[in-house]
Image (cartoon, rainbow, N blue to C red; front, side, top):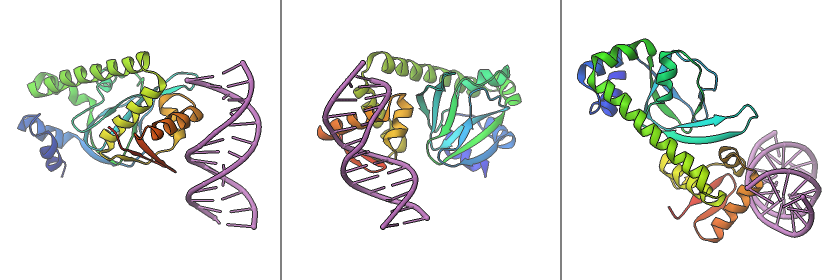
Length: 211
DNA sequence: ACATTAAGTGATT
DNA sequence: AATCACTTAATGT
């Protein structure tokens, strides 16, 4: 079961022996939309490998201000968890399933083993650090240089990619939380985007026309 | 019909 | 861009 799923999504990334080991040591798990996978401060003894779906990674300050950093998709893993997994420190980010997703959890003990044993695993970890860093920089740029209206539109188009649908089921309030702004501001900017013909607004739903 | 929740809006800082 | 103070609209019971 796990083996087939792995074969389907990771056969080009990992060598046969490693796929066997992952299938043997890992546990397959289905998560529902909005399920909390990892909270700030959590310690974890397993790291997730994403098969399908998407995970939203966000950051939160002590004051409760939250901000979305990026999304993880198939082939991604939360690289931050590698560090935390190996030295068993606590997570600095939160991970919530953005949609129904399938994951394989790998016990952290295996990570070090595979690091020395499999070249494909080393590459995977290094690549994923690289990709994650890139996403992080993009997140910083977005926060530092884009105004709220641009951030909002980027958020919507990113979400269209992630959800693989131009019709987003979300509320203005949820978006406000993700962008760490107020609902009123989101409502106004969305209205503006609608007037520009870029989106169409409904209750609990936004149709993205221009992306 | 009534209550609840989402979304729209003017005014103010 | 945030907050307040409503208003209006949609939806659930």
